Image (tube, rainbow, N blue to C red; front, top):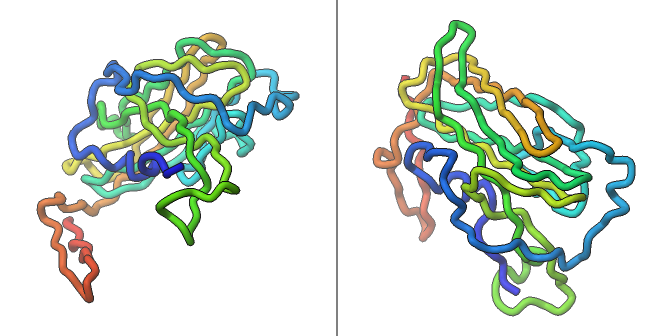
Length: 235
């Protein structure tokens, strides 16, 4: 079985355009597959209410088990002007949650300055994959490499139904404007659905540096490999 699609960080960086409306329809008209490893209802013992927290962007949270990370209702991102930065929220539901939504509000500085409409939240969907093998990244997969679910796709759907005893990550992308005033901004992240009404807090530190547009980047080839000299910061 071959590896499906790209990794979450790559998917989060694919778009070079502005933030689309959050009411956009899902691009994935399909049903998520069953977990080849089976469900794990025993791991939900003692989880009596939904867990709503920020997680790590370096972790692919399993669908069948509750989020085991320490619960936190706020996190901080830091980026250059013109840069995209990301956060990940995680919702673990012991009971079914219908119509789950995640909405990021405007970023507001201490002096009242606003960065409106620069963030979007997308539900992370699961695909069937197998363990990546460094010694065999391509080709036929060995029989002893079992399939499992992998958090991978980013869905533009405005809402998502979360089955009982399942986890649903939400990928949040923040597109920092090139003309943003450096400073610290704060935005609310509202997570709502049947039986869920939580607000997380997302902080954003905008530095004084400006990331040049991709058209201004330069590429050179050295010993058959491509190297991209990082452009000098502006400002």
